[in-house]
Image 1 (cartoon, rainbow, N blue to C red):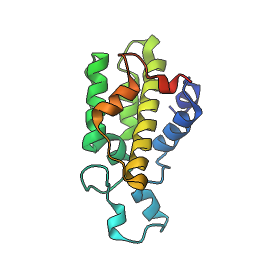
Image 2 (image 1 turned 135 degrees about the vertical axis):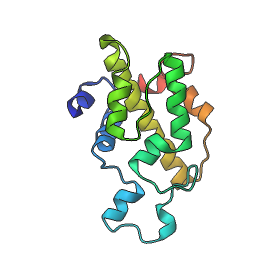
Image 3 (image 1 turned 90 degrees about the horizontal axis):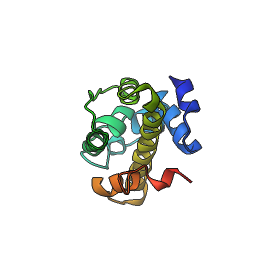
Length: 152
């Protein structure tokens, strides 16, 4: 599975972020706490949405905003797939829901969506920016095609 991350034609930042997501190596609050970096109780909560404890699963799967993004992605792709609460199971389910030829595209899409979720999370946490799901979706697929952000 991790080999598939490096073999997918996406920007390096999306591949590195995806590798770190799948290995549970992003500096989410729960991972920072494991390393004794966070001290305050309030620092462990997700500020992007719903005051839930921040973890990889929360940021990329169970947060109401990320959950809505994945539902919209499935509608756009005209597919129905389970929404696992485990990040590795989600990667496998999302990237294998199409025909064999579309696996690389779906892997690239999964990685780019997650990179953007991480970017939006950081903008929200560190720059007090708010974000709407529709603006997020427009960045991914401005004209029902793959977002231009990831072509360059």
